Length: 388
Length: 169
Image (cartoon, rainbow over all chains, first blue to last red; front, side, top):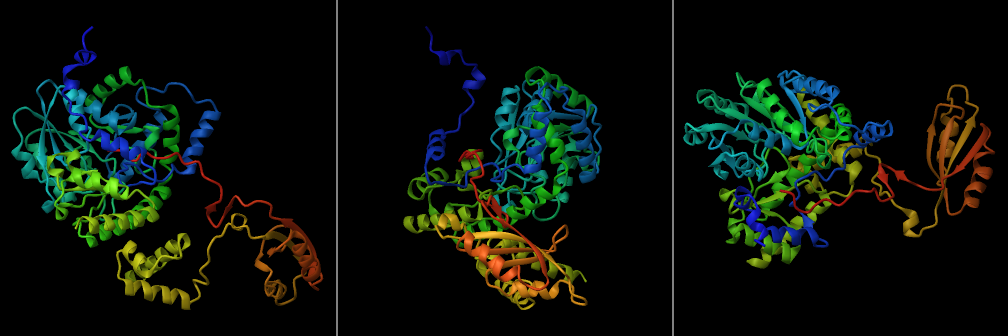
């Protein structure tokens, strides 16, 4: 009998797993550890939203929905997007409800990529974009951003990497892992490049509502961008609904229909319970505001705290991550993270997990209570004193 | 005018922060708000002097502390006085240290009074001996508090919050 691993598809075998899987496993199981390695809100989904879901279950809403998602949800969403961005998407044909933004990103790539097509993405990057591109048969071309630019990708950097095989650009701002945001002007310059080279733009704006300075600019709202943008967004971060698995894609009718074609076969539809809850969620802007205000307080405490410990940290204006440099310690990102975990039981994510240019940095989330944040900063201080 | 609104927003923000945790230092509050510590000190001093902030209190689970404490909500029906209405009897009731709160309410009764004591008997004797005999008090109805589920925005039980994954990329 051959080794089972020989029967795994090549492109899956070749996909690099996270090099520090072991570290993550230990972190998950460690008692009394304070984790700044989380990627989701510490808030429980607001009660009103949970209650709407429970009520829908009591009333017996348990069957499949349309592949596109409940029409009521799509209509409410189209309204909300229009109010917030000025972009109107037809709920019938230009909006697709998906099982998380993760699925939407995967669908988008699978819908547009032919073998050998290239996708440009900026690093440090959320870990899923590269694998999804590769599984869809495409090739990723990475643009490294730096702290001198506060990890904002510049239009020229993108332009440099364009070849005749470039199909799309993935933009992800506010950004995981850096917390960086792009201004309207920054985005307009990128829009010009997309226009000039006729690229599609996949814009993952799942952290859009978590913007603390200035307002979030929806890429699709820029001049001429609606048609070439596949807008991805969801309910996980803003409404603290990570486990519910609900997101959506909005864009040009033909592309969204292509995405739906795949979605209908692999997923059928997003969970009805989550969709029913989402309809209520769209009425809960006050809850979002409350959470955003609290994140903002913690953001300031974290950035301030890290800087005063000598871990130089630029001020992120979105999401709930900070990306401080640990270069002053002389350790690599992985060494820093491992030692911090074993010596002081604080979990941070080494920056190189998000791309080579993340080396020298760590991702510290502040989606943690004020109390834990304070404690974590104290432990980090002890750790730093210990390694001097 | 814009300045006044900004000032007001800072005051409101500090009040919100104190509602959650009144033990934060001025420095910590300053950090959270992204403003200077001196400004925080000044705003707090102003709020205190204007008696907008009356008191800093801890929310205590007496049962867990093993401290004997009984509380009762007394509905009081009052004959209002000419000119002063309910004020004088409300003020009179307020003066007792056993009384935690006195509020004028709508509905069948007029005043809602929260009384605390060491035992139910103590509280009952207090109501019978000190509240009921007051001239303007027509009627009282005593409700003993049996179990606190939530108080001052604090849920006392363990809210079933599933543990998050320590690492999510």
